[in-house]
Image (cartoon, rainbow, N blue to C red; front, side, top):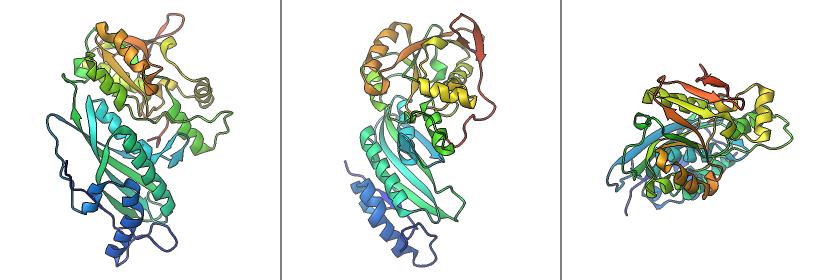
Length: 348
């Protein structure tokens, strides 16, 4: 397979090892930063071609996604903005039933950002891409004035080959479908919030940031009848379920006792007045599957590290359309809705 890639970057590596705005001589400075930071970090031969884009040999149906990451702080327990960008994008492709193949990455850097910070983030992206089996083949870098970017923003775009034999999405959810959840919820949002606000919890809460390609493709390859997949990022489990129910024109009922929240995450949410159902995740997803395949799907998920805590949490119904209900331990039901805003901004 032969590809052509580029990573253009008008950022000089200054003598004090911080990112600076280019004022003349930007071409030589660009080449220096490329040669000393970006290419050594990503280590992909396509980037050595120094062309305006990547030529990619892709056959069959293609999944395509893009996302931007503005998390604050840049580094948090369990990950950083680089691992978040790679895993977030490959997970979006996986939710389409696709195997991620290629990523682009664009950096928006704030003047004065330490070069070592960029180097660490780029190295994390390289490692995350290798773990997910995806290649970083093209990208771009821009610099903005000091105080305009909180250090760094990252955009990633991903392309993958669709392997699922049938379309996957909310429109395909049917009555009596089973809702599977891949593990405990709420860790990413709490990890970022604790790092941002220097909250002194007794235990360090680590983000669940991880690639979900392996468990999803295992479901596809096993022939599980997948009607819908959704990763639980901004808005958490609640927002994902409501979006699906509204699009599908169906109701969904979940069991509160089936949903796992780690004690430290639950305590942190209670302290901050947050509902774990609305807190973001970066390594969790729901799979809505045909009833006859639910048990086998759980066995497949539980056999993999990233989804060993998978459980069935509810079922889809015929109506009322768009309503998501949560049944508590005493049998009482409450209606779950999306928040009008985000509980925790800047968590991805």
